[in-house]
Length: 470
Length: 104
Image 1 (cartoon, each protein chain N blue to C red):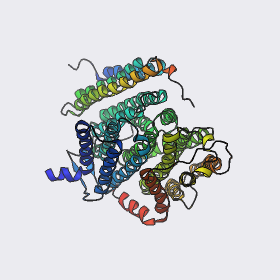
Image 2: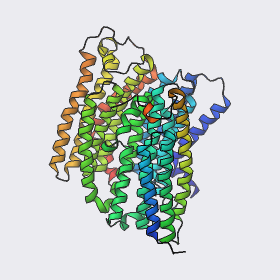
Image 3: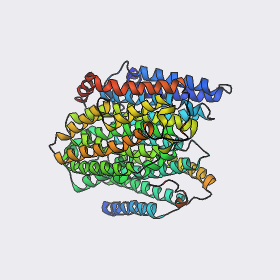
Image 4: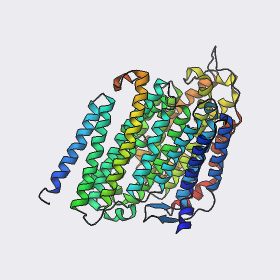
């Protein structure tokens, strides 16, 4: 039993140990330079990532409160990889920052919360993990303390996330009232689709939709993304959303399976709205962070198409797409974060003529945007292909054709950025920037990931084989 | 003790929840908005305790959940107020309309 705890909770324990190490470093060391601290932290995160591949086991702990299996371990590995890449990309921003250690303590606390949330087998555990992952996130949104926009973004995030967890909790309380249990496995057979349970499900869905910013609940997204420091923005858009999507899929497919016909219609409506409105708002953006915020809303719409298929392909295609989404979004955010950290320029006009001065960064951004748009041979094409295939399983071809049309619309604004960088002339382009080793390495990993994940079919097969035990 | 039926208590808690939601949408002072959110969370607490007491008296799931909600609401309020204080330093106001630089 005691060794079980160490093996099954390996991911959580390692993160907790890293947080404590950082705390001791903070207390004990006055003399460490930022560069040394950052190198130590990145090595710790690398060890954390590598350790995720060994000694994984299935099992449950604490009376079904905590569960883990191969698929959950894979999800945690994906999140670990994303955090490592973000940490490497944040190097240029953090090397001149006063509070490096605090940043990482808050960041890793949210990661710990997401791990607990993914592994939750009970609504209580799920709620605790969710709050552990959102409250510190609001604090790091405010990390540029003296910037007006940063505190505005943090205020918007904390109020909307508190509101959404209020909705979620009211839903959970009604589910508890109708079934008398909070455990996922005991709950599922007791759901019979009564009106009160449907109301509870709508509230739960609204809470989740806030977290993954699906359209009627997306209003906080763009403001928070624009105001936060770019490293936090990429964390929000990739890791936080990824973790919530994992949980969303698992709750829909495992717990609310008995009322699958009802939630199919809701997801249909939400995904159509999300794709169309996300696209229309993305077209008119000039700030690249806002632009990527709306583009990520659109991507969530495509993911909902995949989820709504409610077939075996659903979870597999969502996880596969998220893996690709991490690489392509982090590639794009990496370049923007780097340019913003050095020059402070974030708008599309500033990027005109970017290719003449910084060809390497331009190519990284271009490949990432191609992957986000879903142009072959980048992996984004295969990711979207599998999502749409999973969505087509239900035979609702209207949804599929709306998704396909939206992909074409999205091409327009992704290519607009590419055109600005390659073709438009500019009197004062961004000057030539020299890139630190770590961010450069992170960008290369992203580009390699975008190309390799699409061309190695074994990855999708592996995820699909794991999702059979979902 | 069963003089008050469960439906009465559920009516109070649901009313409290939607009063909280209404307050959040209409009030423009950030501290008041935070208070509205606390109202919503407390209505959930009433729900849990009532369900536990009336429908499932032989278990403690609902009571435990309530204790955790109270604790987390306190933590949430701490971070939110810290953020609001920081916002007050730069904006010299805690009206949400004044913190509207980013739109659309």
